[in-house]
Length: 251
Ligand code: MN
Image 1 (tube, rainbow, N blue to C red):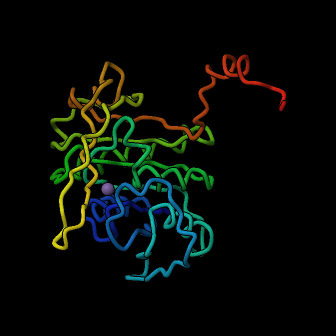
Image 2: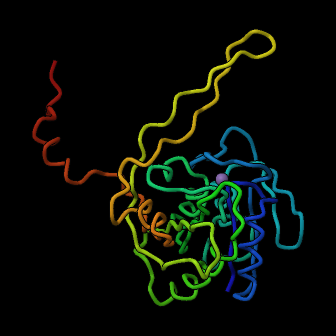
């Protein structure tokens, strides 16, 4: 099996290295990841300049681009073979609910999926995680079982893992995305030259963390696994929109 591992925390991230190491028993592991922390990069592609991948080791590439750039590059020319699966992570910090809209971790997996490969995004529910081995065991189970349970073509898995030993995990749960409250306000300050500066604030607390959500699973000590698809169409709003939307262009 050939496994592509990427992330958004950067090629030197302990979470990425732990995941790559854990996947070695499955076959050839290739890392193509950003050369620095690109968390929050979402699905962005670098179009304004070329990318210069740097080979750090036989199967390790650092790319001066986004997570999406990395997977795109890996699957469309950089690698001389097509991997069997794309794994993204292990992210330092959770990707729950609407986090998936901003997440570079999820984006890397999504890019893999949109280029036709099975894909899993993996995140720890802690910003300084200690139990990567817990996530690695869960990913290994999924990688093993996914071959016989293929997902629909536009679907990937988003996994979030409590930062605790495997023995303290209460199971895996298939979940839906919960929802967060709006983010905390910008943090405003003044730079040494008197200009205003702003830092994006923290993500909001959970708003919808009801039963069945990824938030809920984590709170119960379970690993959440959410199937995500690309179709952002609100199908049940189509009918009402079609009724009030002017169909003819008049002056
Ligand atoms: Mn990250």
